[in-house]
Amino acid sequence: MDKDKLKGMLKISERDKKLLIVVMAVLIMALAYFFGYSNLSSQVDTLSNKKTSLEVTKKDLKEKNNNKQKYITDTDRLSKAYNVLMDKYDSGSSQPNTIEFFNKTEDVTGTWVKSLSLSPKTSIYKFGQIASSNTNGTSSYTSSYVGYKTTINISYEGNYDQWKHFIKYINTYASKCTIDSLAASYGDGTGMVSGTAVISLYSIEGGDRKFSEPKFNSKTGTENIFSSGSLTTDTFKLLISFTSISVATSITELPMYNIGCPVRLYL
Image 1 (spheres, rainbow, N blue to C red):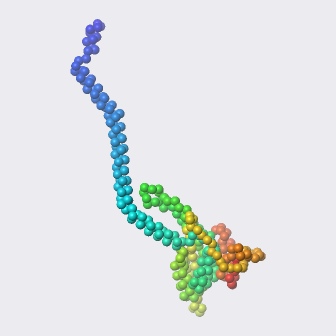
Image 2 (cartoon, rainbow, N blue to C red):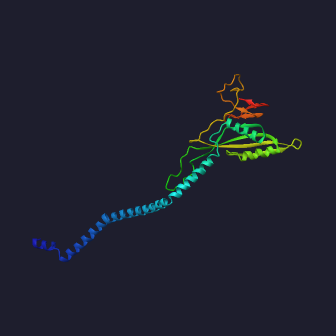
Image 3 (cartoon, rainbow, N blue to C red):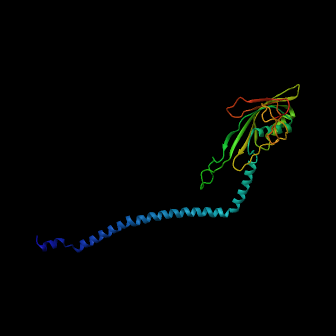
């Protein structure tokens, strides 16, 4: 094949040149779209979504700022209501505290608490388990407070007026307590009401809530009624005014100490 013929075959016409230019332009535009425009479009969409989210946040914050004083007032009101509610619960519980409660009940109502059975307190509620109402915050709040319940079985005796006062006194007591069950019988000949009751005392413990054991004004007694020895003034003294007291030192320790006494006994 001679050189002139080869040049003729390789020669590109003006029409072909224009066609190649168009093809190259389309190819460049396609590459620009895939590597440039599509990526830029994605970034624009992301920024647009962020802008929308920030506008919503701005609107929310502006509304909160406009209602700032209302939130401060509401927070103060709810804090006071919270403190009032917490004050209705004892900050701790103990067997001496329970006995003091029934000592007061006897003194105020005149009802004779003939016997009682003390059992250990049980945990009934742990604070911090309810999901927060703040959807933008954490799902729950943190608290070291724990709610406890102490259940006491008692037998009692008193006249009708004392019995009514007994029920009202417990139901309206400053610290939260409930009468879970009540059995009563009336003696026509004596005019006395006697029976049994199951009473629960409640407490919220933990955090900054301080609990102090009750103090009893007694000068004599013994630390252990089953052993000899004298009680010093610095030793804990507990005044009991019941005929029979049952004390369970743990849930599994069901055999209880039974203390029978016709008069007040110093422990």
